Image (cartoon, rainbow, N blue to C red; front, side, top):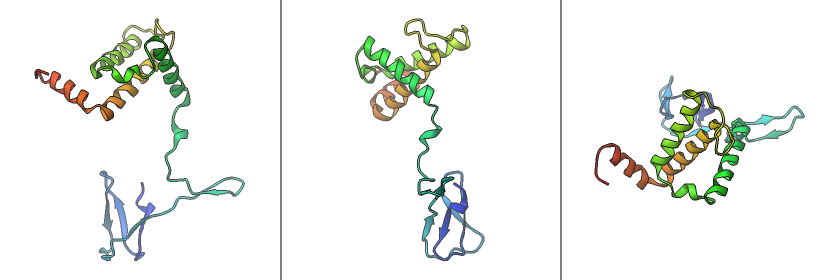
Amino acid sequence: MASSDFYCACGKCAFEELPSGNLTVTGTPPCGKNEVFKKEVVVTSPEGGQKFDGDKVRYDLLPRSLLRGVAFVMTHGAKKYAPYNWQKVELHRYLSASDRHLNAVLVDGETTDKDSGYPHAWHYLTNAVFIAWLLVNRPDQVAEYRAEQNGEVV
């Protein structure tokens, strides 16, 4: 966010956003009020309508075709194994699978997975989703993987 997205109650303090995301006061000395506010972002439509959602998450930035591809691959997996079976598989299996799909494209020149008939890119992204889910929701698997990589007995 730009420093102009914030203001102080005194109206004199200037702010700069640091790479860490924290704000620091620049220019005039701090007034001591410590009352930093975020400016409300207003988006006005061509018809003149207003919506206070300019600072909300932008789902429109997601590539819908790739999300649809993940859904196709997950549906294929649900039919082949079982719905949500992917949550019960070890992290290292998805790391290997993502590498296989990436190598199929980059090394072997394949574009389509033989088993599903879907693009390897969709499988790669689906594995990334699984990996991200495990990283957030299964810290035990992350710790186990880390220990294995460090040569520890698990």
